[in-house]
Image (tube, rainbow, N blue to C red):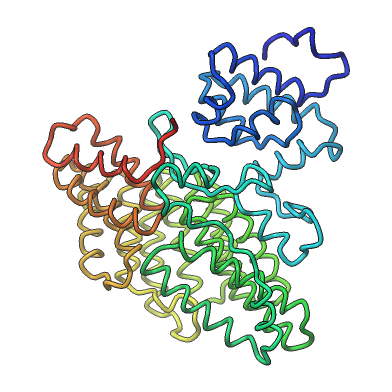
Length: 475
């Protein structure tokens, strides 16, 4: 961090100092606030208020402007310094920034008024700040595709209007009236959840998540007004909605919202006393941890899921699968394969009752193992596994087909077959554009880097151009 300027008074707060450093870097680069806002994908008015210390500065915003200004981490280090110096609990800067970085879910996270039933929902929207109309979208920044919150109007102006579909709809008075007239809403909400799962399989989460969040707000309101057995039934449903919302948010790349929904689901599963649900959500948290780069944490969560699951249940198998993949990500091939073999053995004698893991079969485990094989660098076996999975996948599982295609393409690239990888990659790009799945786009970003040196080979340039067309590019 540079020397503190003379225009800062001795009692200037740490966030005023951070804002001054930001302005110094911006002016040194010859950029206006508008130009920097376009480069960093941040609303210009918010940038100005960051500089004047009038608005909370999430850490991801500090990272974005640091990269846009080529500040080599100076603004991020200054942000860390400011957070340490700011009085805890005395500044909106601290509370908002810490929430953004750590995904806190405590009371008041994003809550700005009497909307108690929506405090968790609207506070987890992944926005730069609570009153910003933003959506999380894939954007190419310094050669990488990152999922970042961007003002919705910027997305609409870019021509990628489909990416703006995650704006949270506002509850209407008509919807509230219909809700009040319901005599037995539990089955209604259960059926809605089943429909949304089926719809997600077909079109992906970007268009489904807003509807699910809307129904979750409504369900929560109904549950708070209920008593006795009705309240318990609705809380169990609300827990399942939270878990599903976490999965959808993860699949569009909104990690903060994913962590928030999944944490709330785990909390309420303990309240309901449903240990099966608790075991399942612990497994989901393990999956989220490994997918967001924390495989050691995933091992602990998966082990907790296995301890919680009933012995002989399919939930036990699910937990073992999460342990297997975490070992693969950590590079421990023998342990990964041992856990996959254990999962197959457990599946052979697992019960067939209940809703959890009804989709588990040997083919599913084989596909999961293929993903781990790719992580271990065993690309030929991984490619064969994904090719088999794609051939067997029902047409309605459109999003999952895109995930398998993207992973298969990476595996084929790992074997050196760049032409086949590019051809499969183009198919995956089409599904990524339809569904907005971060799991597909993340794999394609890695494939793009692998194929870059082979840009002259058949189909490679076509794939790379197709991928560029479905992501946002800062001006």
